Image 1: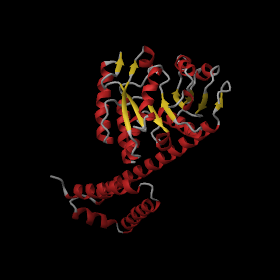
Image 2: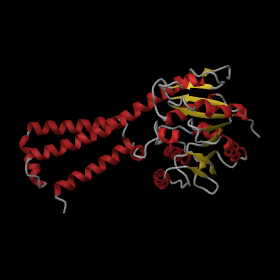
Image 3: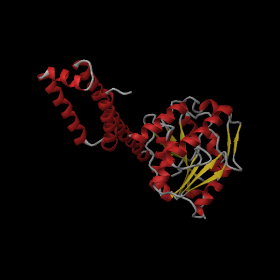
Image 4: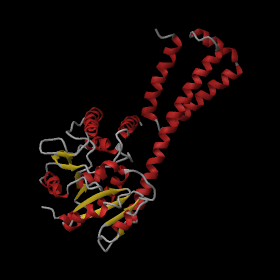
Length: 112
Length: 228
């Protein structure tokens, strides 16, 4: 039986994966998400007891644990975004090298 | 009816200095346009080619076979090629079967023709049993991931007409490009056919080729590419 916190973490995680599969290179989406995560961090810094209140509501023992779980989630999202960007950069690099190869194709023994 | 000069044979090569001259000799003798895409070889591949009348392209860094094939396709397109054939540098493919590969394209029945080792009339000579098992598994994986159910997987012997040359855009640099090829066929609505071919596994090609363990990396690349 999944505890409430696990369900709460899994559902949005699945949603985030779906969202990012569709919007991985959308700048607005990932900036908006980063801002949301930062704002949440600010709120928890100003009201640290809030983490404990929220944690108890969803069956997590301590506020620290709740913050840790969400940090793990944020880290996962960051990895997905970074990988997607790396793939994009790799493709650009490949196309540049391919274009260079085509443009500098050589006649060997006057074949061309 | 095409002449050999209308056909661009695209040969991706990485450290094939020992065999590349032997591979291209009959192709040149038959009058094909031989295009070698040197994927930043560190041996004497370039030197082995220097005496032959070929089109020579070189990547400034090693990118992988998929990238090399796409470079060849870009070049064939730029040169106005009507047909392109991807051909292995290690001598596994049989040059006498090129006309058989081109026939469906010339007849207008297909945009891409893929060689098959496992359909009736095809031969995979001296293939190691474990390699055959892996390929058979790859056929199923390809079918599930791309929706195209073929009799062979990861066979580098392919022929493309002008339409396919203009539409195929490989983004998988390494060996996962073979599965991506099928996705590209499907997404671009290209007509395809399989033709039985005779592939010979020599000691050289077995030692040079990808390890069986690499198939795990290929599957992971394919799945990740599907997501991203």
